[in-house]
Image (cartoon, rainbow, N blue to C red; front, side, top):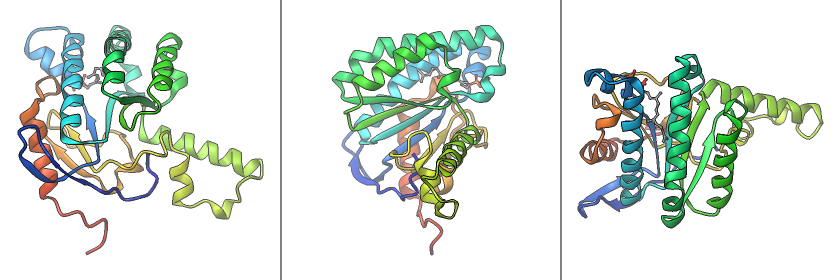
Length: 251
Ligand code: FPP
């Protein structure tokens, strides 16, 4: 991700066959509001995350139908480790259950699963399972990218370390370090930058998500809580995107 190239968008149609003149090639989602959704119902926070996994499944289908090639989901940030142990463990269990449950479907629908973030932080059995599915689906073109133990700053620190190693071993001259080199050392350097970043639950924050890659992304914030995010909300986000005039810093 973040190869510095500006992404091209495809002409497409939505589910009802309605023309959307421009469809984003890469949509990234800040899935927020699970806790509030649960609180409103007098349920434990984990029930909100569980309902949120159902939204993930739906959104994967909306993206497929809309011709979105890359979907990135902010599932767990580096800051989320400071949540109560019960919630952290619950979220890891939910993720494991989700990928096991949908492994066959990913293969059947030809979707590549991959993870960005600090892999060393993830419990070893879960990481082993993720890496197995990453290998099985590696040849598929459409991608679902899960940001796990992820933050934009920590990804940049990883990239800087990799570059420093190369400078130290003499394979890279300091004066050769440019935007392309930085982008090439990010977690998923082959993935184009997101065209559209959607955030649910109304917060107007980037929350350390894809800091390098969001340079020219369009933002869409909806007040809808993630577990309630449905097809209408997704279409609304795509329609808002289609109306934007993207100038990438030009006129
Ligand atoms: C933010 O809501 C959401 C998260 C920290 C976790 C997102 C996880 C999922 C949707 C489930 C698993 C994901 C996948 C990819 C299968 P919050 O808890 O901060 O909500 P609040 O702000 O209302 O408290």
